[in-house]
Image 1 (cartoon, one colour):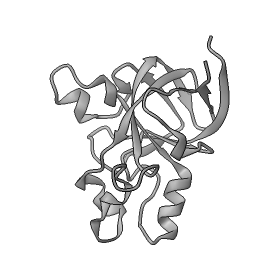
Image 2 (cartoon, rainbow, N blue to C red):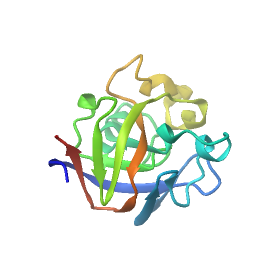
Image 3 (cartoon, rainbow, N blue to C red):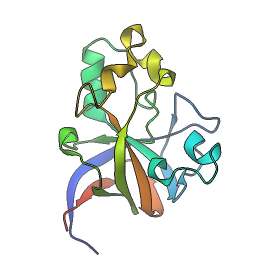
Image 4 (cartoon, rainbow, N blue to C red):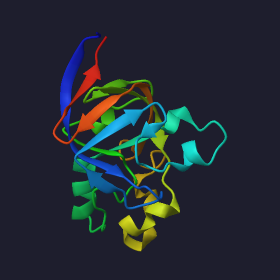
Length: 162
């Protein structure tokens, strides 16, 4: 196994069987190459062959709390993230980073472009507040699954440092 450095903790696992937001919390989930079991993801369900680079979405608990302080009505899961993570240095994330969540391993694909479906989480529907191109270090991240596994709330999050 590669050298992994503990960097954070899973504070929420979020899914939506019907798709869209909010995604609702689970205590434990199975992560497959296609995404989190029980989560409808339009990129894998509605497009031919899916988009493996968008199998899961992660977001920062610290960013959610900062957005709430700004007055935005965002809550865990309302931005469409599958995993809400606390303790990660969000501005340091880069495409290609490998991260272990529980026994699953993901690889960051791209900052997740915001869309109108998460607009209710922001004052005046200003979902561009988390647009990576406008405010780097504030976006959610899309990731591919490179090792399937189980993830539970409270699990450590490790960064591959190899």
